[in-house]
Image (cartoon, rainbow, N blue to C red):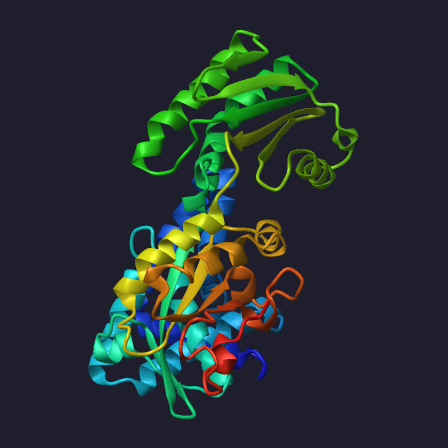
Length: 401
């Protein structure tokens, strides 16, 4: 039997699934479960990718403990979606349901609508009246906020950090799952600890265009091991196999991964395969540094003229997907996001943009500082915009750094 404290969580989660439609929701859950069984690392990646869907489904069931902080944050966002459904018109509700169902098809996830609902709730908590303009009025922007007689448009968007990487994490996970049986067989015949370093000037990408390169690299690694070669190189990839010399190789995998991360940096793609006492580590890097912040700046340059009308101050609310805590903090601490955002604000395309707000899964799931940005997002005000000093808009546009 559910306790009183558990009932609201289950009811919110169930009402959210009902809003989408239980048939569509159940079909998506079945697809997620299938994806999670695709391979060890691929399954973990799928669980992370569909963390919102997975969590809402878990909360629909009877659980023995109170919701965690992350679950509480997701429930609050789901509650905002239900609030939206109750307040918008009949056409707005139909648009809302269509948007949610579209996010559960193909490669879509609930992150985009949850980013939208979280942005709306965040602005309401700052004293703004919020209208879901895209749902209600078919506006190109998502939200219209107003405070003290001043209004602003908000366009919400999700940009993947993969757009700034030559080596995609999704492709790396697929490669490691594919090569893992070969490594297990090789380790059985070559007990020891090994490190295969891969430098990939040609990159490694997901999608149909990336499959030939993925298959070719898999074949090269397999042939290299079978022929007992220690090196292989061409313009697309440089492979080198050496003994693993890190002291943490004597420790558990967590200790090893920490040492590898210190050794190869936050941009490296790492994987460990073990067989008894034998161990095989793969460490891959692109041929150049990631340009995630640059990719975000390019996305904003295309987004602003297409989604903002220019008749009111505009805010770009960017959700940066496919990044982890270390990388997100690196982007902030190294001022890479700030540098590219402020450069964009000098472009003609940014003339109608009064501020940019950036957030990630860490803010969505309620992570604490220093991993997450303070105030729930990184904000950069455009000092050249006429509304930059508006007292009414200040809570939404003042720079947070």
